Image 1 (cartoon, helix red, strand yellow):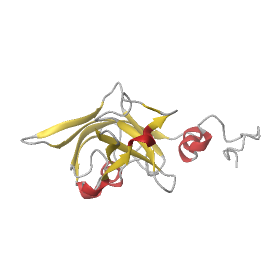
Image 2 (cartoon, one colour):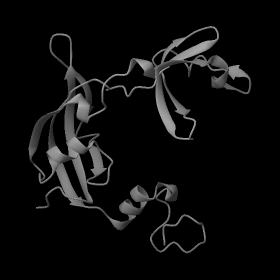
Image 3 (tube, helix red, strand yellow):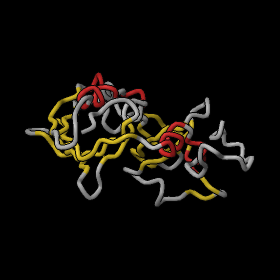
Length: 183
């Protein structure tokens, strides 16, 4: 039976709890019908999450807490900013359904990096967005079970490690598509 180690595909279920007002609050679930599937040891998951799973095998249960300092950090009030409403317009029109309080919107920073933000408020001329991760400032309590541990296939590793490939090419890609997968 395979143990969790670098470049192993891991399938797991979990319940994620965060500190609530009087008790822990269920924030997220990965079920047997929709499990978490990831490649271990390549930076897909939080480092502390992986450290807590390393060496486990199918059938092993887990129950651990990751302090917010090792998860998504402190909540930063300065990461709540007002942006001009017109930057959210498409063809001169503002989409009130897409850009509404509580919506997640993809943004780009000044270096071209994608950033996800939560809309806090839509005003007459500005949109207030929160650039903090939704779980910033939260301690994360995971309770779950490992369902499967297996070697990642070459195709899976190519798709994960070279996302520009889109997983559509194989390691013997020779059609000149320029994806770099066959190199």
